Length: 240
Length: 284
Image: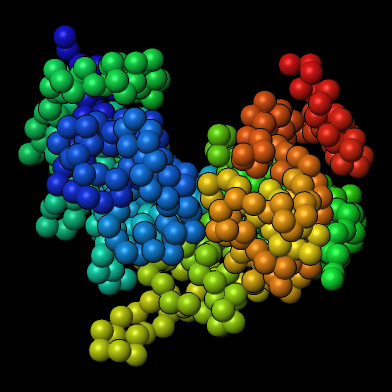
């Protein structure tokens, strides 16, 4: 049985957490939360899962810790033992992310959420991004309002704990492991062509070393389909 | 022994033009909506609203009462954006001071601790520093010499929060999973008003002692406001009224529909609001 694009994405998100060990992971969005749970159920059993509210929960929903927003901002974020997966309305080649507003900040064309925790996350701990629809609207030459800090701005500001890890989209997995920390494709999902990524991106992405995103194992597929998302809600976020 | 019980309208009457108002809760969670609705019935204007924003911010913007919003986000949680806040921003009707969520907490903490600022890494490298040109950095006086953001204290004239229980003297208890920042909002303010689902005898403030978030030294007035956080959450008393929130958003998006929403839900007193909510519920 072959995996759907959504299932490939869930596994790609799970892979973000490989090696994280006993730290808090805060996945925002449905596919990221499936990915975090999958990682915990398989190769990263020590992960602490934040439910986005005041609880640390295991995959069955048992509460194993209390982490209200105040504690999150006072200690969890600055302490640094956290890996967050945020969304991005815009992202650029150096990993600057915008969730605040589109256009001029003084009078935006479209008000979005506000910067939320993105400046603090990117100043303090590992941050990845999840983009369910890879497009030129999101992958832009330059973001309108830097919310999450990218590599160029982090260097200018001297951020010693800056760690933007990867971007997972419906098309592939991207990192910044180039000499100038410009975005590079780690892997494209099965069936995605380099041309498709190029056409959907508003800046040049180094595709030269891109592999193919790995398929879920049989056990991972079973966990996704039978345990984590039996209703198939993943397909709403990433249609096949 | 002080009896600090007040009505929502008495609290609203304490708010003057141009004041800086802190509002507790988080997004569309445990917002002091009965107090906000009372505020909507007053002629007050030019407010600076300091909030982890939800529909409190949207409704105050809709009523033209806001000069500035100090925020890290405005969201309705299950619905990402508040249409009235968006409209106020996109038409240039309000000014903003935008912070990272942690900067926002630090600003309240600094005020609560009577410090001029608190140092933080959050904000460095981001455009929060550009859009708030008044922000300054500070260099560590220790050998590391690190440069940090000096987040200025956010002092408040009045704070409005909603908890689950309080006694008449102002000892107040939250029974849900998260205290949010309500205690900080109170400590950062000159005057602090707490609405609760129920005013009880002090002996009835049972449950874990840690749930007694506010003691009476940080509270100037207590308002008994059952369903006072509607349509936001006040768990365990009730969850968010998602259907009503959707209705609010649909009306807020449609300038032709909005006056009808105001007439039905916001032009009368709180009893009228709740009876219209019941009718809305019954029509489901």
